[in-house]
Image (cartoon, rainbow, N blue to C red; front, side, top):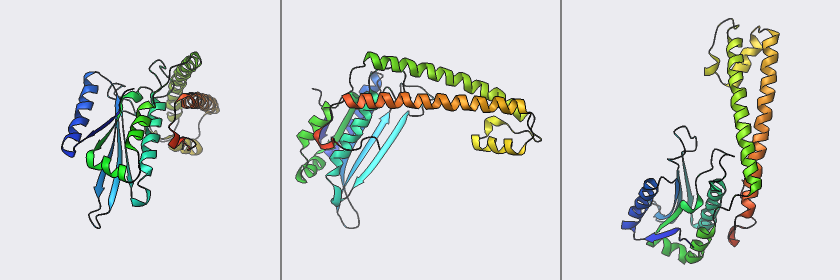
Amino acid sequence: MKNNLIINTPEKIEGDVEDFKMDCLDDEKNYTVAKIKLCRDIENDRPLLFYSQDLTRNFRGETDPFGKKQILKVFTPSNHEAVADVTLTKKFEDTVLAYKKKINDYSPKTDIFSDHMMLFLDEPTAEFISDIGVNIEGLSEDFSEMESVEATPFLDDISADATRLKEEMYFLKGKMVVIKDQMADTFEEYEDPRRMSDDEFALCLARENIPDELVQQYLELKEQIDGVKGRLGEVNTVVFRETASKIKLPERIKGNDLFQ
């Protein structure tokens, strides 16, 4: 089993993080870095635990809206132990999103690869967490064992369904651009529909005198787009639920609502 937990001295742990990032870049792999860090409140010296997560997907695409994602959570003395649950829950989310590269297209978040999510602690932090009752060895095992599952023929079919739906969505949105341009040409004062939100465009429709034929085409297209969006959402939900059910969950987060 791969060990996804790195513990080192405070002076060296950041170097370990950078080495991991560089290795992933050299191998052209997307990755997630998770860290737990013990700090002290400057006003009263009480211990605070910070959980941070940095998702980097350099190899997804320049227009990827999920190219980078950062999470930061703070744990006070009243809930220090919860840092372990959050660490595992975030690994679960990473694992669901990773799934497997065989699933080519069901969501914009498909290629994170959970085995490339590493957890880093410096030695004082690891010692502190151990002192408050968190089993470091157990946390390491739970974190490392949670991995993406194999793609099934059913999910391969779902992937193909998602691809077809996205192609249909692209086609319909292209037609919508044309219809909006034709409608905008009839406005008393022209406004570029490409620069308007859907709500702003709807307000224009309410006050402008637009030919009924264009209005009817617009409404029919909008209904079709909404329908495809709904079907695509159902596909994503099916894949996430199916994937999540196959992932080995650590005992300490079983029963938690992991889809909040």
